[in-house]
Length: 308
Image (cartoon, one colour):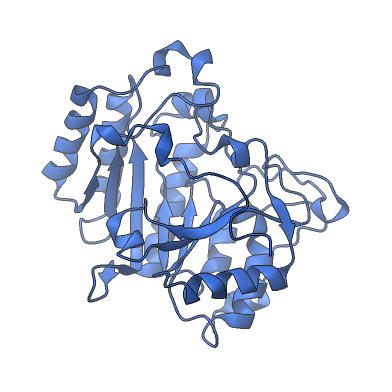
């Protein structure tokens, strides 16, 4: 068992789970910058078919959407939960039951989406059921804005990391996500994720059982920064260390209209130029059709699978 068994994030006196380190006393009801307080909140728990093929597989990924998010992306398609913190309160017992139910439904893995604010609760639940009742891989699905100390606590619990690497330019990170330190934090976080998992591995059905898939969303007017992101990844990792998922699904959501330069969908030229660079570096991974840029790809946050 990992040494992380003996180290737990203390959210009672000042939360420091994410790079914001806002110090909110969540156990006494205060909400952090992420929007979370001292209670577990979920917005949806169901089989999800719209992840990368190596995550969803044939039967779907057992995806649990948590409420709140450390980032403040103005274009977030999941703004209902990330910005508005929509969700229902659940107990740790209920979370354990949800994870086991997803396994019983045939999920290839348990996919924890934006779970960082609830790290302590999740580790307690996994300590109880993983390896005894729960036998499928754990996926940590995040925006890439992670604190290294928190990631260290996950060592030995997470099998697959699915982080974003949104920006290489701090100015863009500040403008669109209110996080000028994002590039540095994401690079360090992905390096720690790769250290924990090692080279990626698949099962006999092509489902990822170990490794890191780095997602990057190409944004309007951002192809040069997108290329810088790919350059960064190539300077840090070999093609055998990470898979890349290059997304074309950007759709103006939430407050995108306040930023005229991103209030549109991307062009084929913008996306294809980044795709070429990924291939030139020899990375394996996934590319999207531009037809993916539709609102229908956003799951409904309707508490499915959350309430009994």
